[in-house]
Length: 81
Image (cartoon, rainbow, N blue to C red):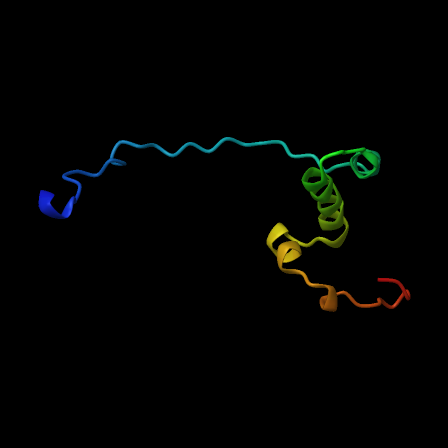
């Protein structure tokens, strides 16, 4: 049994899952504007700053934004991208 490095017992046998309620409040327009207008010198962090509001406005999840390409962005019915 030990040759295959199998466990002799379940390491999670006495683990108890606990669920804690968390109060989540949506960002206000004002707080979102503060994020958008924040001056950031580090290019990588500035890109994160730009992507976060984009996700908020479009409803796209992080993975969807990550996989988004320029050819997937089109003009909307209002005439803008």
